Image (cartoon, rainbow, N blue to C red; front, side, top):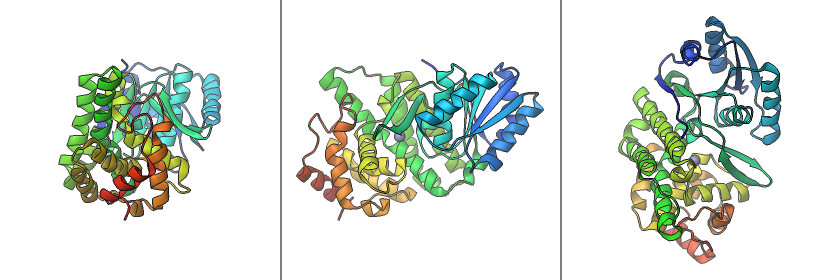
Length: 345
Ligand SMILES: [Zn+2]
């Protein structure tokens, strides 16, 4: 079980990166992995903080979330030989920092600039390639440093998407229990409860979250971090990823213009909660209150792609047993679940 040693959520956090690295015992040099959009607002203060603490700092810019991109960064790690890799940015930047550092056995620190999904704190990397989105275990960040002021400057849509990803645990944990009962799959109460608790936290605080105040951002960031820890404890993405995620991945394959990960997961959660016989109306109302999409129209995705995604979702990851079963939904059943839950008209 790999868990982060430090989690810092607050204001002016970026200025404390150097001292945090010192405290964690990293010496000499650091490699900052970041993206062009956040370079000035986040990576620059991180570099300054590291330099002030006496670190030799180098930076690499991430262009895509792909295996060749990770290999490029690994090559750079091989040259620079940093004692710590620091991922600063959104999902793409954090994922590349996580994967490349894991492959080179160098610890990494996660500094998210948006609260859009739980990859900011998890040991799991999501990547597209070979025509299919897939995810695998890399390693957990040694520290997570989330600057609320920086995240407050990111678009609200990203925070709402993060809420969708967290609320997805409502059905992900139900799928895990099902797999335990039907397939005798390992099930861990603690990891499951941690994931569910995060979902409940966001559900309970929907009205605060939508204001995007410091408290609201903090709630979502802490929930996302708990989800990441749940995955570290379970040793897989199981507590955090069930049929609602398979639906989102399937949508990513069939829709010409997919929406954000957490937005799709949120809509998937409404429909999967219905399939589970759970309170899908609660999920829909909470997402609506937060300001996250609850329909195909709000996702800006045509109904035919939603139905198609529902019928192929079970094929994305056959080893992951969910409410979709081994054969998946028929077209008629897919249409009905999407209609009853008002995801399509
Ligand atoms: Zn997710």
